[in-house]
Amino acid sequence: METISQVDAEIFLWINGWVGTSSTFDRLVQWVVSDYLIPVVFSVVLLGLWFGWTDQSMRERHQRGVMLAGITVGIASTFVKISNVFYFRPRPFDSLDVELLFYPPTDSSFPANPVTVAVAMATGVWVVNKRIGTVMYIGAFVYGFSRVYAGVFYPLDVVGGAVIAILSTYLVYFILRRIEPVPTLCLRLVRFLCIA
Image 1 (tube, rainbow, N blue to C red):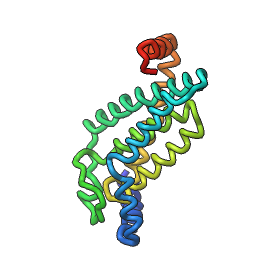
Image 2 (tube, rainbow, N blue to C red; image 1 turned 180 degrees about the horizontal axis):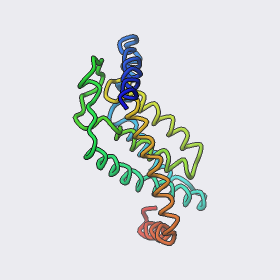
Image 3 (cartoon, rainbow, N blue to C red; image 1 turned 90 degrees about the horizontal axis):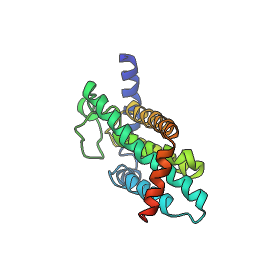
């Protein structure tokens, strides 16, 4: 386990060591790494998928994907919180010489909660629309990389968050299929209330 941590730290230091090489790239990363850009863009995509289709079957498929993504964000975030109760990993800037391009968060580094949320959204969409889901995966990857580059996560923190998100999505997908009349009734109810 210690060897894995050492390799993780070495990869982190190599990635973070590029900070300062290009002020333009550093400014771009500071923009991407923020708590707002990717989460807001992904939320707007989910809203667009929820409301934006005239074809009824495509609209229902997308609404099921948005429902899957929303439930998964809650479940995956709960798994992250539970894991943080049992395991706290200090942030890279707590123990290494780091070029920090972001404010220093105080929660556990592992798993990367913001990446977990982004990947959960992307996976929920990917289940119903591969093209949009793939674009969201690319955005989630860029988000995770920027968090490592900016000095706030180790690479394995990002990978751990992504794995939790993907596994949570398929767990929720399986459960929703097993209780099938319930998701359909929920969609009918929100349509009746004119919010879908």
